[in-house]
Each structure stands twice: as C-alpha cells, then as structure tokens.
Image (cartoon, rainbow, N blue to C red; front, side, top):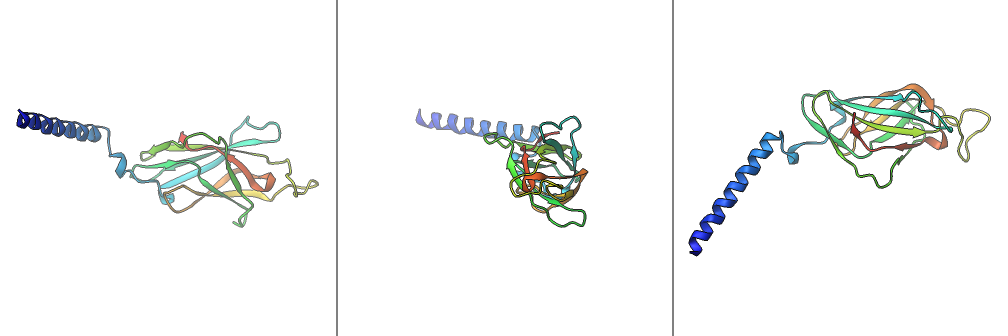
Length: 177
C-alpha cells in the first residue's frame, strides 16, 4: 500500500512539473531569464505634459522605448542627472513622487514603451537660490540611468527648462506607456 502511495505522489509531482513547464512556455520567456534593460537597448524622451502647469510647478513625461530585438524590463525610479547646454551636470535631486507605491516590473518587448512622470518647479526659487533671475541654469538634456540594467542614455529636455529648488524632481516609478 505504501509503495502504491509513493507511486501516486511521484506521478502527481511529475504531472505538476510538466504543467508548470508548459504554462511557463505558453506565457513566453520565463521571468527568471528576463533581464533588466540596459541603456544601450533604450531610446527616450523627456517632454512637457501640456496643460500640467499650475501652482508653480509643471510635469514632464520620461518615456523609454525598447529599440533592441530583445525583451527586457525596467522597474522603480530611474536615476536622472540634469545637463546644461554644453553637457555640464546641473544640480539634480530625484525624490519619489509616491512614498509607498510599489515598483512594478514593466516588461518591454521590442518597440514597447515605459513612462514615468516628473514634477518640479521651473520658476519658484528654493532656499539659497536667486530671486531676481532664473533659479537654476536651464536643463537642455537629462542623463537617464535605468536601475539594474546598466549604462546611461542622454535625452533632450523639450522644451529646455530650469529646475528650481536645486534641481528637485518628484518622479513616479515606471509604468506602461
């Protein structure tokens, strides 16, 4: 009787393993093998969201597109560094827009896009910034480093803008675009 029970358990385990393998293949690449996107796989934009200006702040959309032939993912907050016209680094302080929001893993098939929203003040100076002129130099580009994927890409800021409060940006985590 015990031997028959062992045979049934082994058969059940084998069937369960086969079903799991079949489901993983049907769903596409196994999640464990999916690599984070490297900057070299991505292109991007950082553009104003028209109609978002108000109360001394404005929102820009950071969009990343997988331009490679390989599926990859982005997750969490991108690392950003504002750059001036000549490529000189400008003050940049990225803070999460939502403190307790979980970071979703956004899978990017070739040609797919992810987005994050940046909110900041382009004209209200912070402590220690000049009041009579622009609070900070104008940012013409932004260097983007996707977490875990490695590398950086530089994208244009459209339109170029100062980022006051010493470059303080409230950034959302990536989501599907």
